[in-house]
Amino acid sequence: MTGYGNSASAPDRPTSRDERHSGTFSSATPTPPVPTRENPSAMSADWTIDTRTVVGLLVGIAALGGYLRFVGINAVVGSVPIVLWGTGLRYVLDGVGASPTLLRAIVLFDATGFINSVTPFGQAGGDPVSGLLAARVVPMRYETGLAAIVSLNTINRLALVLLDLVGAGSLLTHVAFTGSVRSALLVGTAVVVAIGAGGAIVWLRRDSAVELTTRLVGSLCARLSRVPRFEPPSREAIRRRLRGFVTAIERLGANRRWLALIGCLSLGGQLAVGATLWIALRSLGAAPPFALVLVIVPVAKLSGVAPTPGGLGTATAVLTGLVVTLTAIDMATATAAALLYRTAAFWVPTLTEGIALLFLLAVPARSDESTISTASTASITPAASTASVNDVNQSDTRLAFAIAGGVATLFLVGVHLRNALIEPASPLVHVDRRWPRLRSGLDGLRTPERRDPAVHPHHGRRGHDRRHGQQ
Image (cartoon, rainbow, N blue to C red; front, top):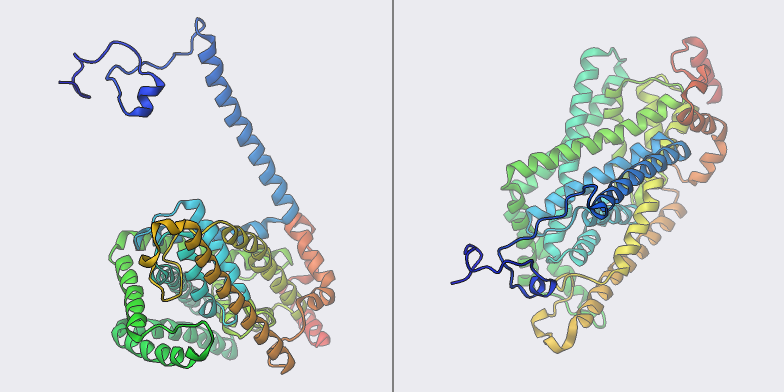
């Protein structure tokens, strides 16, 4: 009897390549060559591997140093949340039954950030399309991909609310504010908490929410039945998809250890976002407490619900208003800091997010469940090859992106024409107006010793007169 554990019957010879590939292994495992002077080839092979590792490490450090000097520390800190939240998405997908690689999960999260940036109403408009992209990249059903995206965004929002409460509590107990500033601080915190409480109530009554959503979506699809080549799904199919969405979230919530890990990653990403604004203010000579930044960022993120892609035209205005209201910083410095923050936390990541999205759309679909059509994949015969399924997936995904882009463009043009934006001017106009102050901030990011002490917020009467003179 021969086997892996019977050494007596094993031939006393090394295993050949053919035997290794055919699955017939012998128990006599050849010992690896030991690097000695008598065996210089083994020594040179090991030395080559070590040399390449060291050289690669040195090249990576040099490239990182050059990148930091070129773009500044603020842009690097603004990109940290992508890595942390992308890692969190990997664990979320693993929790709902999918198992992507860490790199694929980070690239997927990067691409979903671009979707949220070009669709109106922020994540509320981008999550449905992001779920379709997730189901296309990772083998899983659409409702499972949507549940993973929504779950991660919910955990990120809960981490943001937690930091907001911590920052507000620290400020209210250690810093003396005027009555109006204290009221604004309490109102902003109350709005953030109310949104979180509303989401918790919907989750507690999720069965009723599923039935209500089924009726609303079913009625909408029935009206769209007149559209050519569109077959509306039945209410039972809609209900099944929604229940699959809820089941995926419940499955993720059952693993408390992974939830704690994902929560820590979300907190780290939110702290990096706050550090981006804090570094921008410090580079311009302002020195607000970090707890105040933790309050400003969550309230400023509410501008993302505006009907413009990525909160374009409103985010800078809201952020500038909050900085001026809650600090002694003048309008010019606050606007320049808001532009630096938006550049590092929004515009620079948007470039990488767009590249990630193009890459994922160019790669063939890996899932035959990512289609949004009602046709069953069981009707596809094996002779119809995987290429036909990928064609359907790519058609559905690109159709969804085309619809999202068209809606975003219509909202952007319509809102601009009606002057409904808080700040309808283009960001380029702000850069042109605030370029001297913005340039000093960029210089401060690279060489902090060049800060201009004249822009420090604590000037007493002179800073007060300067602000009123500009207004």
